[in-house]
Length: 219
Image (tube, helix red, strand yellow):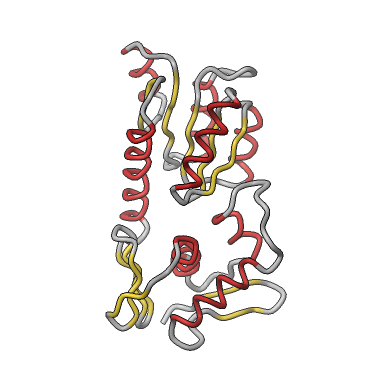
């Protein structure tokens, strides 16, 4: 899942990004609220982690803007504002969760996993096309009722293709779901993942539209 981290403390942001990447998230970081709003308008992430104390505009204004763009985008507020009034205000403005600084990384990860499970439930917790089934909650893939082994990125790639069955997914679009901004990605990375996936899936399950991208067709 793609996480947008909006945090002006660069030391904290770097540490958080490394931790989240280690858990398999693609993490993009911005330190200014106005830039974050424009980024969300351009490319909706899966989860937003939002600090309220930003240098250009208040995080509550960012939260209001996010809710105008998307009512469903999960937003976790991560802030030093710890009063009950601040928490109630944040939740009333549309935050899905509110975690005060300082915090334990294990608790943050647990809360993000709740977002993951919720998203998986909303987006086909058990999605089947032909003989292939994705169990998003259990992070398993079955082919003809037999579990197959996939890396996390192979799993996320297959999930993106199956959730968008019948719609072509471009290489750039798939890269944005799997990798962070600025992360070095070889020009043939998606092709390599597709190659490995095809070895484990039925023939022609993933089809290539040369020069455009990839598609899984509904059965």
